[in-house]
Length: 289
Ligand SMILES: NC(=O)c1ccc[n+]([C@@H]2O[C@H](COP(=O)([O-])OP(=O)(O)OC[C@H]3O[C@@H](n4cnc5c(N)ncnc54)[C@H](OP(=O)(O)O)[C@@H]3O)[C@@H](O)[C@H]2O)c1
Image (cartoon, rainbow, N blue to C red):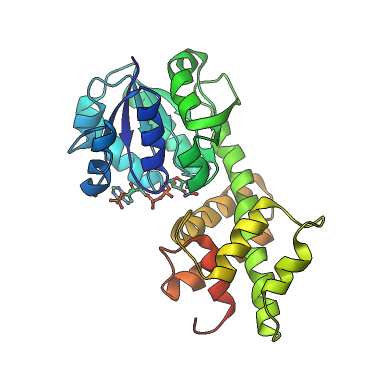
């Protein structure tokens, strides 16, 4: 049976670990705030009190933590428990530069590094329908096959080269789409509201027409109902806008939309909405909301 050390039981990590357990995989979870890991105990997870304890003896290490620095700290703390040849699937969104540094860190510890960020938010994580954007050596695919099958509806293997970070590169492009789209939906609703209209009218016009899409429905519903229960927090979305802009700069590609979305997220954070869903970028259109 495959054994997985799962580092990070946040909005995404907890349901992902739960799906591994449901598919019969042996999972040990570590999370900084231990209560979130303990919540998975009744579903069969073992809880580790440190990254080192979690990774000891595991076939696969998965990281689903907030950013590259946090991932590096967790793997560094895990180091005494790591074993050369262990497969490390790095599934957090860390950006191109940090993904390269993490691949080097994996090499230092003799780990088989798989760059495997995901597209899809809290609900696909719960339903096991994420799209996994994976790059890593052929040798890791067999061991990861039941793991990724439990987490996602599809795995796109992008490269055979062990040092590749093609998953993260593709993730930068796809998450730029979802983040910019959210900002644009929020702005359209805010503008209608500001012009003295019922913002729901925007939804009425768009629904069922050529501009409609499930993401528009999801985010406009959140805004119209004022339900900002986080699927993807403003703070993580703001982090991603910086990573995307950096990726664009390194490639000589100008990215105006995502930079503007980043400015909106920073305003929403300053208004106290950092832990809310990124649809709370709606508030950034108004002075004191
Ligand atoms: N939510 C989405 O829709 C989505 C979709 C695709 C990818 N992602 C990416 O997946 C990753 C996780 O996202 P999420 O939505 O699950 O975020 P989240 O709920 O904010 O979880 C963040 C995780 O990182 C941990 N963490 C943060 N700072 C830490 C520190 N200094 N030391 C140790 N642990 C720390 C948190 O521990 P605590 O519980 O102790 O705070 C938690 O386990 C991020 O890279 C995000 O960009 C998110």
